[in-house]
Image 1: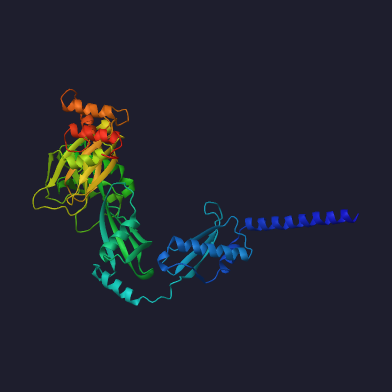
Image 2: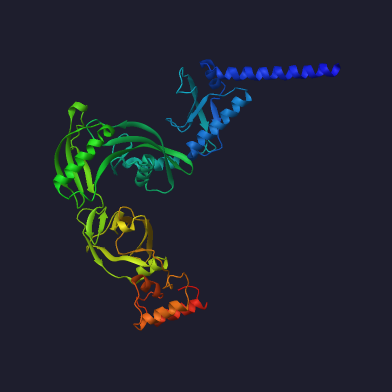
Length: 479
């Protein structure tokens, strides 16, 4: 009997505990404004984090969220069904906002929030000298509000990393590698209904030795570029008509309607300005002193001959292109297994001119090479090589370089260096084929000639046959 009684007591105890747990879950499910306010009230006014000030951002948010969840757990506050947001997107590095809420996509949305001061591990470090130096570096900003603006041109509809551009723009001004910068808040966005430009200003924190030493506003003035495809004729009417057709598709995105195209003005070999009037009925138009215009360009830049196009040259610079066999550059491609040479060119800038910025060089190789990897070897002035491996799309490949000089384009075939018959072996048969070609008893294809010329002297002769035999018997390991 006693055993039965103990068993009943245990069962009742378990049922009672289960009931209590079930009641707690019900309470959490019935979230009220008072419940959310209580969650916020129990949080401290200040939280210390084991981070440097330069860790500001996602690391700070993660650490603060970890600590506040620990507090709620210790106080037995159920967070089931509650959304928690911790954000450093505020006007001070030393504050984070904490918000708790119900599901914003469901009816009867409720929320509560507070600002919490954050103390970093180096918050008490004095860096007045660094602050003064930073102030001196940014005194060159052009207006009283310490704002720095950078105008960039991007293809219409192209997604870009605004924050990265701002940070790089500020680094250009500071010109000091000891500083690191982080965007923290978009202050405002301006896109006038009569203008194509999009202006965005962002607050940027600047750090030195992991310590905040200043903040400035950095703005980007984004002007879209219309890229005109190759199949559009290079005349004013054709380019203007194409620009109109593209602009029509982007009216909703850029909040404007083109009322009239006034004129097309060529500003370089491949860039144009197209001046326009906006329809006043669509809203207030931009009333700046400069006429409204949009930059458009030909797809691959200016043609410099031999199916080569260059994009990014300063106005007034001319390019010379000649076909020229360059054994050293060719050897670089062959050594990487690219034995089919598509072209070898000497690309140079006219005398007394220089390239100031990186440029894009596009090679049209033909649609037969679509989806194939093209090796582009570029010899620089100091004798070193840049080697690019690009997959051909739409019959062309593009590389970005800082100078012009010899280029060789090549693609892989069936053969490798020393293997003339494609059996994936280098042996006496290959040496025999080389000797037969040397004495005129055998004719080699261009790819076979490149496979046979193992010493890269531009000739196929007994020296190559000897090298192949030495490789075959193991006397040498490479060509």
